Length: 116
Image: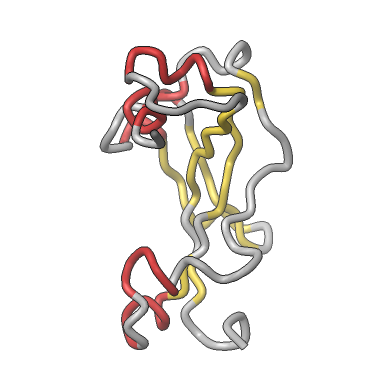
């Protein structure tokens, strides 16, 4: 039902994969818990967010099977600085979004520490 209606949208994101159990991790230790990184599609349904009252973070993003990532996880040893990556979205072979991780509003160590 949801996939058949108009309003599906894509948003390329960097996925931070936590590799070990953690709780109440300080910002300066947060990256010690990161296994690696992947690319993800933060799928949104604009009709459910705006017209149907789902809100920015609720129904418009929470359908089963959404937020796919991969096809793999790249370790922290390979990606030394995750703040300097170029990320793109391709739809049916056409590049529809070009961005970079440097535009994130919070540094990744801060984001990882927010998961406590």
